[in-house]
Amino acid sequence: MTAIAKALAPVALGLIASCFVPAAVRGDDGPAIAATVERAFRPLLKEYGVPGIAVAVTVDGRQHFFHYGVASKEKNNPVTKDTLFEIGSIGKTFAATLASYAHTLGKLSLDDHPGKYMPQLRDSAVDKASLLNLGTYTAGGLPLQFPAGVTNDAEMIAYFRQWKPSADPGAQRRYSNPSLGLFGHVAALAMNGRFADLMEGELLPKLGLRHSHIRVPAAAKANYAWGYDKAGRAVRVNPGVFDAEAYGIKTSAADLIRFIEANIRPETLEASLRHAIEGTHVGYFRIGPMVQGLGWEQYPFPVPLDRLLAGNSSAMALEPHAAAPMTPPQLPSEPALFNKTGSTNGFGAYAAFVPTKRIGIVMLANRNLPNAARIKAAHAVLEHLAAH
Image: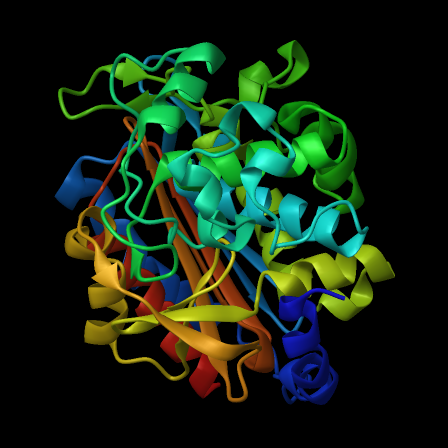
């Protein structure tokens, strides 16, 4: 058993039962939920020029769907709960789940280093970081994006070999696509597969997400929304190194809320997948107003809006922040809100849930509207759900 596993074992045994207690059964709050969602989200279309938005809410396992506007301005087809949107960095929570699944199956340890699976990286600075560091953006200062000249696997290897850290592993968090991307890539190598194949062929089907893709198949393209950039041009995500791992998922409100429900009640899943989901809820580092886990970021609930905004601010995404290790790593001992934002050039998304309250929300938009606008709207809905 690894050092991390030993640290987690007593905590997990003591907390799993207490973290997923069903909330009291609510009455039919559908009309009030609809009114709250309407007030929170409809104004965003006009204020930020968003062509279409899909919102899904789950309360005690009951799903509510709301859609506004169009999936394509050119075709004028309406958004539905099945419209596919790019979810950007919310996809990192899927990559983290795959890595946690590999850990559960004994294919890797979070104490391992990337050079174990990529011999080309042995003895490089990035190999001093553990897989846990890669999965929590604490490898030592990897940047938000690869340099423009990194366009293939050979250039990716060369970049990591010459990279010079600005901090020791575990000392600071710097949000990074190369960091999380390498984490997901190594997880796939540990499972003897390619990331996209494992995601589409194993993890997504096991989660019951049959309308979520990295590579949108021909049969689903009619449901794939167009995103719109700042100039109002129709766009979709560009290919790039680790795009699948870091920001490549396309999904619908119906599928994403199902994923949120799996996170709210992982005990409903088969054992290995349950443990994988629970592994992404473990907190490893405190960074300012939030706790960083694998993919998900968490806050004590109820969380004031200003604290949630600070944790999802541009400064948190673009600047390094001191990381305080949680020793031992732990599941939240009190109610916690888990969240993640995601964006591509033409899309913006947000997902949040509170397991102990059995409430969650996702919003998908085909324009990259500000994080603050998404979070304010979702926070208003979550406050309503928690109060009823």
